[in-house]
Length: 282
Ligand SMILES: Cc1cc2nc3c(=O)[nH]c(=O)nc-3n(C[C@H](O)[C@H](O)[C@H](O)COP(=O)(O)O)c2cc1C
Image (cartoon, rainbow, N blue to C red; front, top):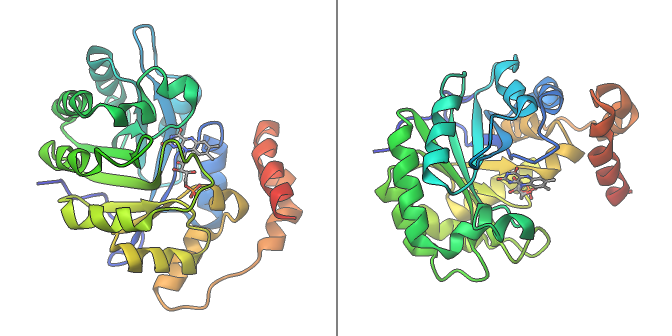
């Protein structure tokens, strides 16, 4: 049976998580989000795993120097069993809430190496990788994936593997790898996953507001939502979700974020995703 997840901020409500986003969900970004209304869980950017890899210091800092008080799951991307196991053991020496496997990254330079979303073409490889990581992880072992590579032919088979290896949480982005980020999200597949899985399920993809979070939970039956890009546009979104789930009036002060953006970016580099998102809205 899957192990229980760490306590959420408000027990009894659907869970919320900040989606891992490379070059975005840095330690300063997690601090900003925590200040405006923390999610139940954070996930790090992915640690790359290969024969020469070591733990990237700036990603490790989002675990070791994270004073937000919220649990942080460390995400890995890779496929070599020996080095994945070595990296899991290295991470377990730090205060991680659990280890998360990336099976969704759609960047061609990533999936061409059969890692990230590339794994979704190869259920036998997934079977071996989940077995290896499960054995190396005495605590929580979680997976984040999409519904398939170019189609959903292995979807049910992969869900069975998630059950077989007693994964503790699945975060499911309702698009295939080939659909990247802009197509419709197939929430019907997330609903199908819920009927098969033994572990909790977080719905991911285009959860753009607290009311959309409630709607997605309602139509999928998911146990929680994982939110990425909308938290960049609106760092209050997790607080707003809690308020909405509790039936309270939802806090609305988006304009303050734009006015204060330079002061809370933390690093000049974080201005880039912020400015990009603001430009796409206005
Ligand atoms: C800039 C960016 C970087 C991302 N990096 C990662 C990553 O490191 N690991 C991962 O599993 N997903 C990554 N994703 C995917 C997101 O976690 C999420 O699945 C996707 O954005 C859909 O959720 P959203 O519609 O709430 O943004 C990234 C997405 C974006 C936009």
